[in-house]
Length: 311
Image (cartoon, rainbow, N blue to C red; front, side):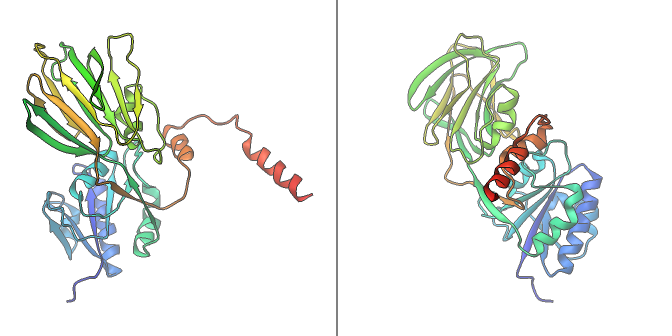
């Protein structure tokens, strides 16, 4: 039997039987179209997908996946997992939303059949999203390094204790805050944790970094938007005995030692997202957050302008 020249990685929500059933159906259709299918090893343990003959397995942290596309069935958390698994492969991610908001997803559950057809036909475009590199240092030694698509957050580890953090931008101190934490986000992450913390919504095509304090007790504690080449740093103030944790996309974390400094900057390695439509971001924002737009009369004005131009 010849090896398929094309291969797709399927990533599913680990604890949702409906996602696993759908993944098995997608795998069957792709295989029947002559497209190879693989999945993370953990997704092939006692699941319907494991029963589909011809589905291969990849190691969870093997970034050399050899796939043209990563198809993710789940919510934003599962899409972030897919981005983590495929990091460095160059394969774009196409998310099918099985969750609630699913801001990173490109299709909904009811669109799954059409989505599989588009995958088979390679009928999609690809856009790149900025990511972040993060390092935590103490006394010049690196104690943690990782990356993030949405955000890097420094948060208090104990509910009853407040952190004291000094924020630095491009090598200069901005302020010291007593706070619950700080979120440093990409435009993609502006609709995630940074949004919940009171940060602005930033369009994906804007190249910028966001810094959003969480419950800061200070006169100046507004969200800050800086250029894409800026270097952000957050330092645990010496002498403070409150413990802190650094999180990347809410998935990878480590406890910070006293006096540690967390440094964040734009990564050279973006995440690639497959797009099935050319919808503007405004429409996505309205649809995902169910925003009220019933008073808008723009379409009528556009029609009237067109009719006037034709007379």
